[in-house]
Amino acid sequence: MDDTAEDWENVMWSDETKVELFGINSTRRVWRKKNTELHPKNTIPTVKHGGGNMLWGCFSAKGTGRLIHVKDRMNGAVYREILSQNLLPSVRTLKMKRGWVFQHDNDPKHTARATKEWLRKKHLKVLEWPSQSPDLNPIENLWRELKVRVARRQPQNITALEKICMEEWAKIPATVCANLVKTYSKRLTSVIANKGYVTKY
Image 1 (tube, one colour):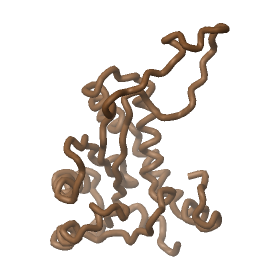
Image 2: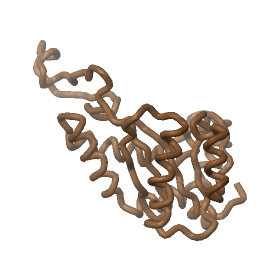
Image 3: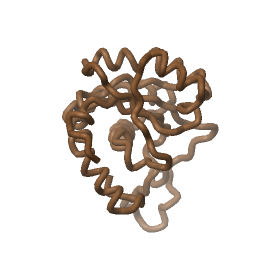
Image 4: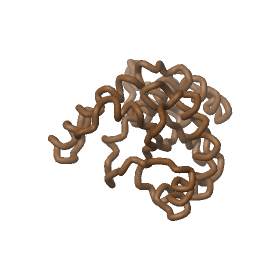
């Protein structure tokens, strides 16, 4: 709570998410004629066998970092490989200041001894993170933004989905990222006020 806006600007936020082939999982409403509820144009098809992409991404107040499609089942070794190939290049691209701080949650892959050791060897400062805290990570707002943008483009297959995800992530304005970080202390205040329950964030 005592950290300044400048402190939060020095954080590289990260997380994983899954983007489904048929858009965001939310209620859709359609205008339709009576007795046409089962007509294909009034329904949303289901996807068999995991119709989506698992993504890892990062961002800072300066904009979005790399977004990558996680092709293998994520484990500690895969996660460390992702970090080595994408985290530091993102830090350089976004011209983060010396002493920048890395944020990831307490997923077992992130807190594994080998991962902690890798981070220590790279001299990376990691933000202390409470358990069960989805409202605290502003990247959740970027995932929502990405999923809405991707759903608008209606990709028809997994290859198109991956391409569109990359394109839309790159198009998210740096101002959106800056605003998420700028309002971070308000987010913390809101989570505390709601005693850890859901907030508007």
